[in-house]
Every structure is written in C-alpha cells, then in structure tokens.
Length: 119
Image: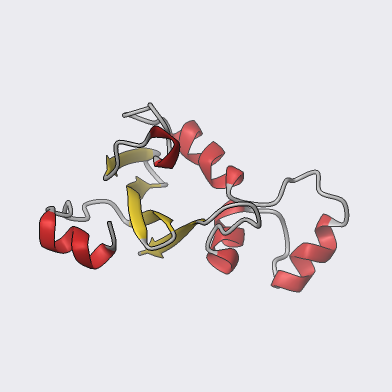
C-alpha cells in the first residue's frame, strides 16, 4: 500500500517519538518504526501480513538492540573491504548505520526495500 493509499484507508498512528522510519518496499509501506534513541524506546506499526516484508518479521515488540541490528542490516557490512573509501565517498567520518541510511535510504543492491526518515 502506498503512503497515499495508506492515508486514505488506514489511520497512520500519530508520531509520538522523535524519530520515525518508514520501511518501504518499492512504494508500499511495510512498517512504521517510531524511535526515541535517548530513552532507547522502539514502537512499530506493521501494514502488511507478509512476514518477510515486515522490518522485524514476527517480532511485534522489538528491543532497542533489535532496532540497531535492523539499521545495520540495511547498510554495507562493517567488515567490507575498503570500507574507509566508501565512507569517504559518502562524506562520513566513521561507520554509523543511521548516518549511512541518511545517505543511502537503506537501499541495497539485492532488493527493493528502503527507508524514509522523518524527524
């Protein structure tokens, strides 16, 4: 379901935490992830029954560690050869998944998932 369709057919939960991530497949909203990084709070709202399309699969109440792991899963690996060159190309001083996602939208070569960040 696209964001436009979602707004027409479902109620999008009000944003109550400082950070909102829209986990998308192409133009379909799969999961909204609301986060308070200071308090390490994570709330999710799934908009698909397809477990493989949900940001956390079967997990309905992810921990902050689950969230951090999810972010890292949408980045190139820390152990990637010539990682420092990749970071330089992106203008990043060090490996930090959220900074990488802000630059890449969490896009990976092998799938059509991506992340829209709303602050």
